[in-house]
Amino acid sequence: MRTQTIVQVAVAVVHLEIQLNRINLTQKIPLLCLLKKKVSKSCPTECRKGSYWSELPPTQGRTQSHNILRSRSGPAQGLSTTVSPKDAWELFITDDIIQEVMKCTNLEGRKVATARGKEWKNITKDEFMAFIGLTLLAGSEKNWDVSVRELFGSPLHNPMYKATMAVGRFEDIRRTLRFDDKRTRAFRLETDHMAAFRYVWDLFLVNCRQRFIPSDCVTVDEHLVPFRGRFKFLQYMPSKPAKYGLKIFWVCDARIPYAIDGIVYTGRQPGEEVQKNLGENIVQQLCSRFRNTGRNITTDNFFTSVPLAQHLLEKDLTIVGTQIKPDIPPLMKPSKSREVHSIEFGFNDSLTMVSYVRKKGKAVMLLSTMHHDKVVDENSRKKKTEVITFYNKTKGGVDTTDQMVGTYTCKRQTQRWPMVLWYNIIDIATLNAYTFFTAQHPEFKSGITNARWLSLKELSKELVTPHMRSRLEGCPQMQTPIIEAMERCGVTKATTQQQERSRQGQPKRKRCQICPSNKDCKVNNRSGKCNVPVCNDHSQKQVVCLNCIQ
Image (cartoon, rainbow, N blue to C red):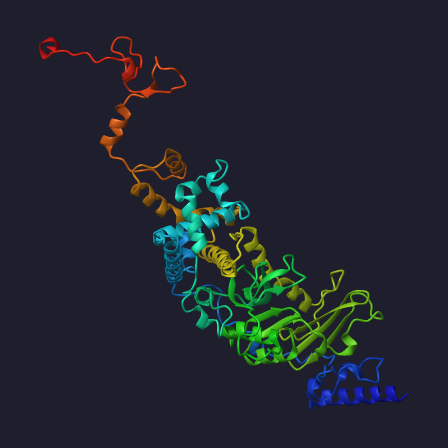
């Protein structure tokens, strides 16, 4: 009786003050618990952190500022139109990255060669680009697990490997590839676990941020790069297929496959304190460049929280994500007494919480600052709310990027974690370049299901062709199988008309008719009477004077 009296009095007071417009429903009284027929003694509308939730949505007015997008998505302004996939790729793997890696690799190569008493041949830009091109070619053909010797030596594989460079040179470059100066690494490791790759990683992320303007919604999630080597920040994630590797927090476009920014999780850096609220800090750091743009951020339960949602609202950003337990009122938690596909709403100022029972005893909780009503799709069988539908459409930004990168990954087996990150940024750069190029050229291979595979093949060929030509012109006596492989790739040695005529006028060499067949003696000489090919051992020179010739 006492509880029912409290409910009746509260409802009467609320309805009276609604008419008088004197109070804000979301601040004064925990209406959600009072408007239910069953009210527990612990007041279920108040969660453990003390926030109150109302069942009634806020009054609708003009569109709020955090739901107004202030920029158009697509390639950034001021960039010239790319002509080929290679032009788009070079926007992400820029010359400063190439020069830094070449410089560090040549330092390591000279050091290793000197220790062995040999001389190191410095890597040129064309040669290094050809090395990357062959790596991408192996990824496009899904040969990342095939040995290098087999790729270069087997006639069943692409002739572009053999035509571009020697297998020994390829392995030497891969073995000595470095991304920092080892002479100063010890000093940098005192403050950064990722010192061996930090500079190249930062250069790459700057290019990703500046080249493309994301759409109205972005996704923040974690990505595990498979690796089982030994290093300080190896992560174990049992829910992932690989389970061990490097964990990278990415923010990706939710509409198209484009990686905008990322953070490699290195754990606690030397001298730092234990991090608290890691998920919130990651989202704030990754999305700091989006402030005052009106974009939405979709996250999962590792990142989502009420304090994060309130912080993002101050920056004119919204969030939609699955909710964590401390912020959920007891009434909205899973319960076997709730019917399947039933929905509970809670409103707190600009925050909206939804509890949806997907099956008996299981409920999904979502938090949104983008939606402020109780819109439900009554025509569907499952009767999902607009919040759930929007979350399902935008939650896969990072997963889609991860899946597309893994389809044609260029990674190869290695025991060095910087090489794992190097392969990863090459894969990400290739995917970003493809998205950038197709945004500028919507007609590029439109209607073709394997358009990305064809663009990868074209990019690989563009990267290796300059070095292939210089190799052909710089080596006059090259082995015939290599020349034939170059011709199959469309690279031939330029010849003059006189050289072509002289080559066409020469008779075809044939085997000497007198020599045994196992000797295989091929000659150009022919008998003057019977026109049979003979060698010098089975022929004689006839001496004729000038008078007889006349």
